[in-house]
Image (cartoon, rainbow, N blue to C red; front, side):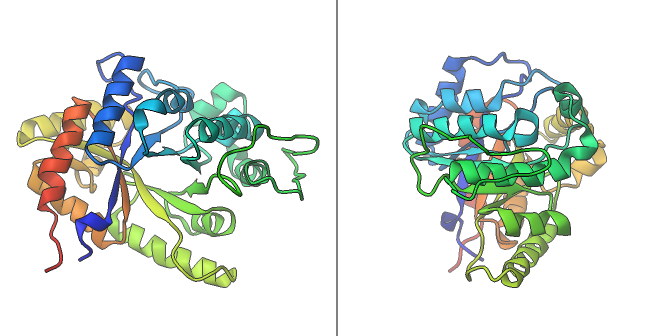
Length: 318
């Protein structure tokens, strides 16, 4: 098996109010703790409305730039259809500028009908709009002179200034749960793939990597794997199995509107350290080289427990 040291870990910003109100001080302390523990990515998800209070993701990521040291900043994933692709491009460019070129622009269509209703956009339009929005982002962030004209969006007379620091622009990673259509979109329009830990399994992730490689060959892309990451890897390390069960049934299931049984059988890092290490090893064996964890309580301490007690148990090659 590939050694654990070949895997880069990321930490999701704790945007959801799970009983502790969020603050700039708290975000900074969490981010500094993550950087000090060797997490290499700092991630921010995006929702307009949610079942619990949700701090705005791009704003929180921008506010954490200084505390993040040299961590790569990732939107996991920004929502160009809901925010508008030009507006989101402007935000992403600013984060790249202010961070000195440390942004990965992860984007997705969003799976919440509530978000679409709040934005006044038909949920059934999300896929054709997202395909166009991706092309708008690439034109604007990568300064493509060809421009884009579509049914929903146009870059005519739009100039993004200041330009991002990275050249040709921040890499654009496309979120997909791993469907054939989604992976074709990643291969065609993305610089990387964002998978979701609670919407796939290690086996399906491995299959997705193989399918993505096949799509890239079909498109005549250069050899070599496309970067990928497992995002929204919910984390709660505890030797108290009752506490783990309460986290699943009392916190995660109602928050995600998922049956507790489905989450109980998922490869999430919730429970004793040994169980979490087994599940982490399964992701690594499936080909995951970037894994982004999201603590569900006592966040900074959970980041520490993961690094000290879980990754230490992952087998290494002789």
